Length: 479
Image: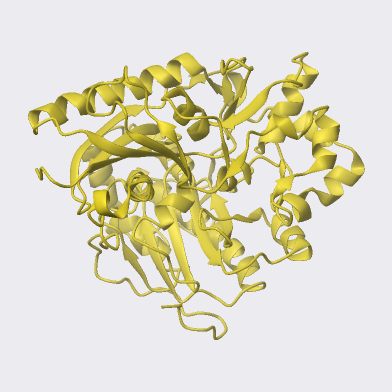
């Protein structure tokens, strides 16, 4: 390990797991630790996360990483970036204490409150916030808590990465890309949307000061394990956006496709598309919101591919890597369309507003491989609909990068080649955490940083996989 260059850390608060990555100044991975995200599940798809359980998991990671760094020489971590899921957050009181557990972004509660929003708020929501109106947005959960009797005035909303950064020693801030996921931000003005605040019965003090990703928010507490105590800290932003920028700015004519619990297609825009386009896109469950890069916006389209694939595996009794690899081989032994009669097996559930795996069998001989292939084809159908809507607003993408926990499966790559342009597959295992560490490097003075993670060296990639051609000509990817 180098004794002259600083170490950097990235913390990724994911839906399935919380990951901590420590890298050296050249971007080499030194330590990776992961624990399950400690949701407390309830009936009908509900899930909550208490502040105590979340912070206990984070501190468990820090202790484990500290022990491994000690074996490598015990050099201190100079800076840490915190990224993670959107829509999920904590309400804190003036002392910084969370007053309620966080709702999972996929928790279905809040639908009744959304339906009760004033008509002007419902009609303008997508055009103002860039989000489809539904129970996933944070304001649905805030309205639910209000209706359950919680007084929102005097409290502050922190998205989970912001809450963890504050709990580790930083000051309370609201980062733009994460706040874009709440339904509280007017995308044109970059300020809190007044009609929504009025409906919730709060003022703009519900949000801490708004900052861009990578802003210094302080230093970690001195009581943390020695390698992490006193590190500069920043909120790196929304996980999918951080992963997309992990190796530097992505081309404008390019999809970054992240396949975790949710599968997210991301396109970077030089400027916002405006109220009318946001309204049209939201009608197709596509977001147009602020990027982690100042001045840029992103199109974010999602399907719940990972969720339904995981449930398909569990339905088939597969819960380990060996079983998954065997299933992958079995799917690849079939043609892409499977070998059952047309209509013999049908699947739904991948839409971003769904997530409930439903399987209908109308024939015999439906093996686990046939089921898994059918789920992949169903998710392809949903992705094709999203791409069609995006192509109506911006020139079609000409390239893509696939990342995430599912993309090492040959069956997944074969399926996505049906709907995506030519793509490569990232070989980096912790794209979001690496991106967060890269953003944290910006906290260090150039001289001290010794040009940290120079140019964010590109991860290894698989041989490009030919995909579908664009349906209409578009400009080449930006340099």
